[in-house]
Image (cartoon, rainbow, N blue to C red; front, side):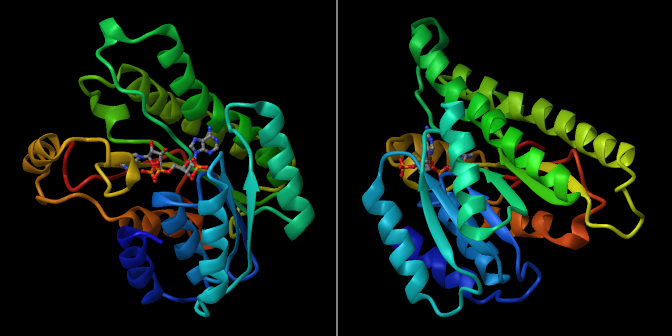
Length: 279
Ligand SMILES: NC(=O)c1ccc[n+]([C@@H]2O[C@H](COP(=O)([O-])OP(=O)(O)OC[C@H]3O[C@@H](n4cnc5c(N)ncnc54)[C@H](OP(=O)(O)O)[C@@H]3O)[C@@H](O)[C@H]2O)c1
């Protein structure tokens, strides 16, 4: 565990509860960074978690060991390798989670990458790779999860987009477009889920329902920012009204709030967690 993950784990421990007892959550990119903080936060409310990862098996196994050592985690954890840009991997991972845990209540589409370049120098491959992971991957994961949730009549899908999808950013045409695309995907899936439940007579006044929402983080202190030069980070900090980078658990607490049964009336929404960057 790196220093950032350690601090994040300590802060999450203070919030234990049972709002998600018995629930199963699949978090893509759940082995490190924001995704690992989301897993710990959901588990602190009693959920079992399935953490997805792409190629870094060592980090995934480390996540699992640390989760098991942490007595404050309510449920159990599994890890699942799969590249979200491949639809067949996404279907397999959702099936693996159903086989391992028997159900899937919460999908957090968090896996994401950056390949930053000025638009005029961005290759077609740079464009396609980022769109494939961040946007298509979100759709490929949501599709089989939604099918299962519609059959059961309940579920939560939460996408992790970015403030950059709302504001744009120099050098991030592919990333901004992929994260903006998630906003349209969120609203469409939210409408479709409610429509399908209503048609099936499963939309009740006091039910949990199926909701689809997005969180748009500002700049978060994870490995994703490690390649950003300190001078650039200083400039970024100076543009954030609260004057600092976001901590991963500050994203996680919004995700676990949206995941709760009691958040049934919040759907198709975009939740900014960015220190005031977009005001
Ligand atoms: N950090 C920020 O400042 C920031 C700001 C706004 C939004 N976000 C968004 O928040 C999310 C998490 O960011 P982070 O900073 O926590 O990232 P990170 O530390 O780089 O971790 C990325 C995670 O995603 C997984 N992943 C990467 N490509 C994948 C693929 N093709 N298929 C499946 N899993 C894949 C990685 O697995 P491996 O370990 O196997 O590589 C890892 O678990 C991303 O969507 C990012 O765009 C981040």
